[in-house]
Structure formats: structure tokens, C-alpha cells
Image 1 (spheres, rainbow over the protein chains, first blue to last red):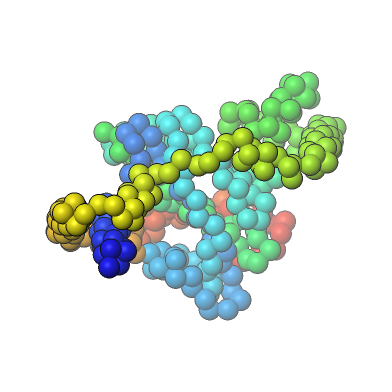
Image 2: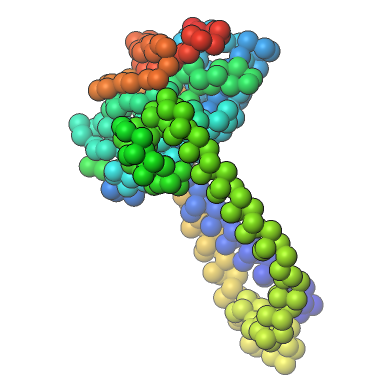
Length: 162
Length: 176
């Protein structure tokens, strides 16, 4: 009797604590916010091709853009990564296909994130650009070759800087 | 960039310790200068050899007796508060006059916590897809350089999305 009551009690406490912890940690529909003074740089690498009709469900948010902008029938997400960097810091991402993406967030002005983006293939820079993007916005770099098709990179930034 | 400058920067380039401007300059130079490209490959090869030699030596070390020896020195693991509580509860020397109030208090805390956590406000954010699609993704490009044959900037007003499309015409392929 004592053992049964004890286990019952611990079970209830564990369930309640577990439920509470899960609720407390659940993000409100998105990633954790970067600290003020830092930038969350995120990239996604998509292989697009005309072999097959598959549209990766993880790209559902981009379906309209991809269908409008590109002539491919199949889109597959092959990499997704986020890095938190300070202003002026560098976020480097290895991308399938032998590419390397280097993003350097520079400043936050007029609700736009200014950043330098380099896409390097081996030791050859195939894109070297400086641009500004609305906070939480994303732009696309397409065209680099991939063994399975063409690579489309989504590069975005998010900051809480005011 | 001269070969001398490039040679000095090659080790830092290999370690990724250059800033973006220098990295680009070294990358450009070494892609066009055969001796510097060979020097870079030589450094890469040397780094591989050094790391494989170190790995081989590390693999030779026998760590099988390492953790058991640490465990012996650690002795008995101290119990956490949760385990101590369990031991106390199971000890059997506490009368029900102690157990019942303890059980009641724990139940009350559990119910209060359950009530509190289930009153969390409902999520107001939209699912990921519509929320992302609603963001203005138009980019303002200040400068753009490429080592490839062509680059196109596409800014679609309908989807408010900016695309940089690069292609190397030496390779035949699909371009939108």
C-alpha cells in the first residue's frame, strides 16, 4: 500500500512537472529569439531539379515563391542551419556540393539588416555581395551546380536590435 | 595580390582565420596562379598528413582501463534529492501521521501546478508557413561581384523575394 501510494504520488508530480516544463520551453511558433546585439543567421540549401515532382514539405512556406520564380519540378531541402553571431562576426556554413557560405552581419538600420555574403566554391568566390534585408527577411541565391541538380540557398537574418 | 603576399596568407587562409576581403583575395589569386595553387594544395596535404599522424598515435593509446580506474576513485555516487526522498518514503519507519500530510501536501502542489500550467494563454502565432511567406523578403543590393560568367538579380514584386541567380556558362545547364 505504501509503495503503491508513493509511486502514484511521484507519477502525478512527474507528469505535472513535465507538462509545465514542456509548456514553459515551447517556442511561440518560431525559433528562440536572438539576444539584443546579436544576429541569428540562418541558411537553407535546396536542391532543385526536373527529375520527379517532389516538393519537400519542410519548404511549404516557400512553395509559392519557388513555383513562381523557378522552372523546376522537384525541390528537396538538404541542409538547414542557424548560427548566432555578434555584429561584425562571421557565420560560416558548409553546404552540400562543396560550397561554403560566409555571412558577416554589419549593422541594423531602418529595420534592415545589412550584411556581406560570400558563396565560395572550393577557393573560388562565386558570389560576393553586400546587401540589406528587412529584419527576419530571407533572400535567395540560386544557380550553383549540384550533382543532383541546381542549388538554391536561402539566407536570412533576424535580430532583436533596436 | 602578389604571390609573396599570398604565400604569407596561405596558412591563415587554410585555417579560415582571414577576414572576408583577404579570404576572397587569396582565393582569387590562388585560383589564377598555378604556383600558389600548388602551394595551397601542398599545405592542405601537409595538414592532412600531420592530422593523420596524430590520429594514428592517439589510436594507439589504450583507454580501456581509463574509465574503470576513475570510477574506482570516485567511490559511491551521492544520491540526488529525489532518490533520497524515495529512500525516506520507503524506509517504513514513518507513521501514517507523517506520511499522509506529506502525501496531501505533495498532491496539493501537484494540483496547483497542473492548474497553473493549463491556464497558459493559447498560442496566437500563425503556423510557420503563412508567417514566413508574409515577411517582406525584398533585398537592397549595395554591391555584387562574381567569378562566374553571368549573374542575374531577380526581384519578384508578387512574392516580394529577391534572387541572385549565378551561372557558369562553361557548364551547360538549366537557367530560369
